[in-house]
Image 1 (spheres, one colour):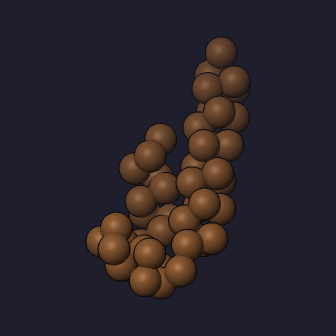
Image 2: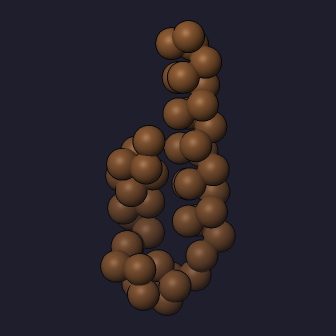
Length: 46
C-alpha cells in the first residue's frame, strides 16, 4: 500500500509542477508564487 501511495504522491507532485510551469511569470505573481518556489509549492500539495 505504501508503494501505491508513494506513486500517487509522486504523480500529484509532477502534475502540480507541470501545471505551475505552464503559467506565465505574471500569472504566478498573481498567485503569490515565484518561479523558484514551484517545487516547494508542489511538495506542499502532497
